[in-house]
Length: 244
Ligand SMILES: [Zn+2]
Image: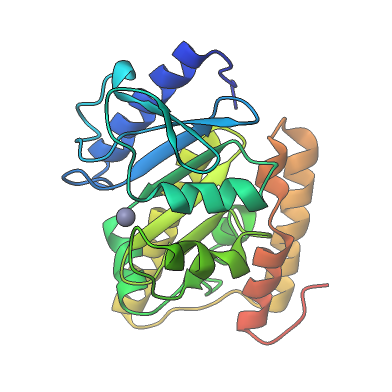
């Protein structure tokens, strides 16, 4: 996994590709959502405002500096660029950010719920707990402040009454995380609809963590996928038991 595109034209192509995937999944209806990737240490390549992610062309992308100022491009900068900037500022280790409105995960965010129940093994193997950032008006500085408490130790965050944001070493990793957020939300929703969710026990979580460590030793996985110690600890916190 994780072919990392390096040239600007490759990155423009990847933004188009992942925008279409997210759009086809129903995560970016209308003109919702935005994607960005680091071009170098001082510049980001970002999807523009006000366009369907299904219809984007490589030439539609805009280049901004780390203050969000437009450096190049014929389109306008998304009003949500501040969310991306806040993440890149704190997480110098990541190179791609995706913000979208996956309907089930956003439903959780609109019901005031993060994804912190340990209902399936995949949650421990992948994202750990997905926290809920407090309400913030889109396009304002409130968004960065609401995300700040969770940026270290998580690579996926729900945003109250809004949507979700994920990030990673590259767009593929950020995309897989967004896809997983919605999948975990769907599972949690169905388990509750069935009326008898059965969370994993502390021992079961520990066993899955050990399996994950083994998996990571055997597979060439980008470092970001093993990056969620706090998120996994929070899963255990849900049942009031320490993981370690
Ligand atoms: Zn949004």
